[in-house]
Image (cartoon, rainbow, N blue to C red; front, side, top):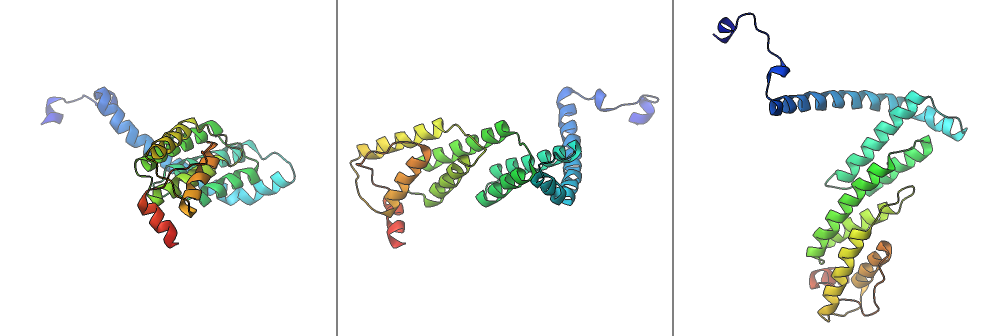
Length: 212
C-alpha cells in the first residue's frame, strides 16, 4: 500500500531522522571496520617476519606495511587494555612486537587508555583494600605503566592510594607481614612515600596472605 501510494518516490538513509541515520550508519561503519581490521591483520601476520628482518637491518619498511603494523598492534593493545580479564603478558608481547618491527604506536592514545583503566581499578580496590584480586589487577596495571616507551601520568591513582594510607593509618591499625609489605611495594611502584608506621591491611587479606 505504501508503494502504491508513494509510487515513484525513492527513500534512502537521507530520508531518516538524524538519530536513526546515526544508529544505522554506526552499524554499517562497525561492520566495515571489522572487515578492514581482519584484512589488515592478515597482511600484518603474513609480513611480520619481513618487517622484523628489515628492522634488524635498520631498513625502513614500506609505508603500507608500517601503517598496517601500526594499526594492528595499536588496536590490539587498546583492546587488551580494555578487556575485563586483563592479560598483562599479552600487552607486553604486543609492545615488544612493535619494538621489534620498528613501529611507532600512538603512545598518547595508549597512555590515556591505560591511565583510565588504572584509575578505575584503583578506585574500585580502595573501596575494599582486602580484595586480593583487585590488588593484583592494580599491581599489573601499574607494572604496565612503567613499560617503555609508555609514560603514564599516575597522579590520580597516587592520590587515591595516599588517601587510603591516611584513612587506614588514622584507624591505628598497625601490623607487619608479607601482605603489608606487598601493600607498601605498590606504593613504591606508584611513587608514593609510605610512612614507617604503615596501616594494617584488612583482615581478609591478612589471613589469606599468612596462609600462603
